[in-house]
Length: 244
Image (cartoon, rainbow, N blue to C red; front, side, top):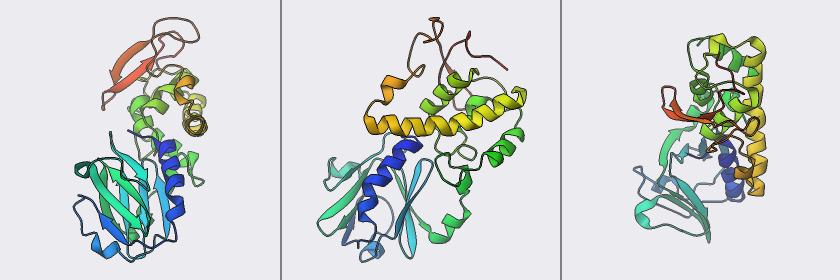
C-alpha cells in the first residue's frame, strides 16, 4: 500500500491538471461520471493515503489500497483495471485497481487535517493526546492508526521504531514521555526522509530493518513477526529495541 510520501508524489504528478476542464470521464468506478464533464479541477488535496480531486460541486476521493496505481497522459493498464479516467482535452489521469468515491465538498471540512504527518497543519500535541488516551495500544498499531498518524504505513512503522529503539509490541502507556515524543517526531521526520529518498529512487537502499534479516547495529538476526491487531509484518532487533 502506498504510504503518505508516495501520495505526495502522485499529487505533484497530477498538479498540472489543476485549473483545467474535464472533457471526458470513464472507468468502472460505480458513480455517475457525467456531472464532472465540463467541470474544472479546482485543487488537489491529500490526507495521508487519500487524494481528493476537488471540483466546485463535489470531490473525488482516490485511495490506492494495496495494489492501486495511476498513470498520466497514457492508459497503461487494461480497461478492467481502470477505475477512473479523467481527460482534459488531449491529456489525462488514470487510476487503476483502487477505491474511487465521490464525496460532498462539505466532507473536506470534517477531516482532521492536523493528523496528517506530512501536512503543514500537522499537530504533534494533538497526536500525543490521542496516544495518551490509548495506553493499552501497541505502538505498532498506534503508528498505523490513520486517525493519529495519517500517512504512516508499514515501512515507516518499522523504520521509525528502529530509529527510536522501541519494539513494536510495546504498549503506548509504558513508554517514557521522552520516548513518546520521539515516536511522534520521528514519524514525521522519517516520512520526509522517505519522500526525499523516493524522489531519488533510493528508498530501499536506506531501509535499515524493513525486509532485512540482520541488525545493522549489532549484527544479530532480526525478528520477523506479524504484530498488532492488523497482523502486519514487523522487523526488529531484540537487542537494540526495547520492549516497554
